[in-house]
Image (cartoon, rainbow, N blue to C red; front, side, top):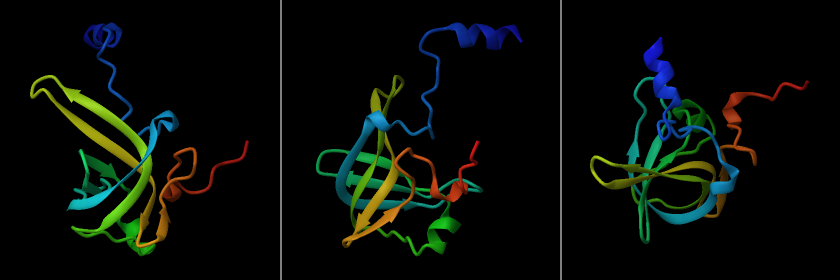
Length: 130
């Protein structure tokens, strides 16, 4: 209705694409797993990941898919993660939440590929050809 229309037209109300993959914001971080956050319902597995100077929320993917590939994570794991990083500022608490959508994760010299170079999830199935 009208309300939605008004909201949409207001600057600054666009939500950042939470699960979109922005290649321009791709970065590599190294650090340690502080917490493994199991999905509720159909959500994906997340990690609370601490680097030398910040803590971030790492989006991995469906737990079943990760398990199928033997991609497991535990607190204390040292990882290098390549992914797209977004920072969301919370006006209420005046804090920044840093999220990283993981594309490749290296653990003990082994690389796990979660998304292709365009950010397309490996569990999404093959791309349809035109």
